[in-house]
Image (cartoon, rainbow, N blue to C red; front, side, top):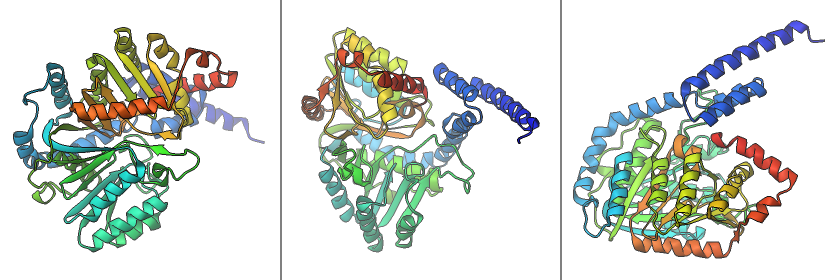
Length: 482
């Protein structure tokens, strides 16, 4: 029989945990809803609430942010020298033919992200998974100097093994091959798989590794970026990771749809800059040399801005840009996002635009690899539908693209979802395409997807079962943390 003193000690310890954690939450001064949820979690879930707070709460975020900023300051001047020519010869902000509204948005994006809009770029938009992997594979096969890859998920399945074999082949040919992976996104990647690459000359590193050996147990501040830079001349970015599901090889989700960009021209130097900063943060190795930043060459006539975002920035870059996108819309705005958990500000922006006569369309998945997030997003449907927002659910497979299109004048494609983690916690990467033709191409694809999707109506929400409404309510309670 357990003595009464044991339960007394547990009660006292739990009380101390509640007081200490509540005090810490109050001193962080974050979103009041998130603060309240964490306080309730600690009160209602003895000990478990503390574990969750330490894993995904905000406790160590600021320490990571300070560390990230220190690393950036070490190479900032060297990187500035490498991109000085880019900013001087290809800065598109003062180009003719840009309307006042676009110029205003360019200035905002430049100010909050400290990156410039570059001219003379080439862009290819790819939705087909096989073609996207083929393009990347061909570019790596043609590499002569270096291959830099950065992904949130890299699996040891058929797709991952094919990529590993290609990277090993290039490393043995003398091409510098670097692979930066997120430690949480790749937590299932076996040591033997990684070792096989390292022993063959591929440099593999992990972003913010966690576990007992590293004495890090906090799961926030993940590197959610997906990018590739080949010889400093060709780049890839978007929403596609390296795993079988991204090629539609897992029956559970069916065809998996992403949007990836193949880019060439001056903007590739901006993509390289992102990789160099992330690599230095993970390894301490400084790659800001001429070898990785060849002189920028004209490759086309597209205006592009590469915008990195993360908790180390002085402002919530993605939040600012998405809010500006909605505010800038005159006629239409279209969103594709797989994980839709907006905050109150974004809901207000979307409904306000709809009330002002802007056609607001949301294209979301009907099935998800994260059902809890799916139902959290659905709790916002009624408010949006009441304002006139059109909501479509895609049911032909897993919709994983992250796309925003405004008035068919400009667009955003990248890795960021419409949720709190992409807004404020994770490291993300977005391209802003200030080009009517590219925006129109994305809009045509969006319209085709909507035609294949089911439009959500109010009566569908009103007919939810008891279990569905309960699941939605529980998920809605956790939205400040998702």
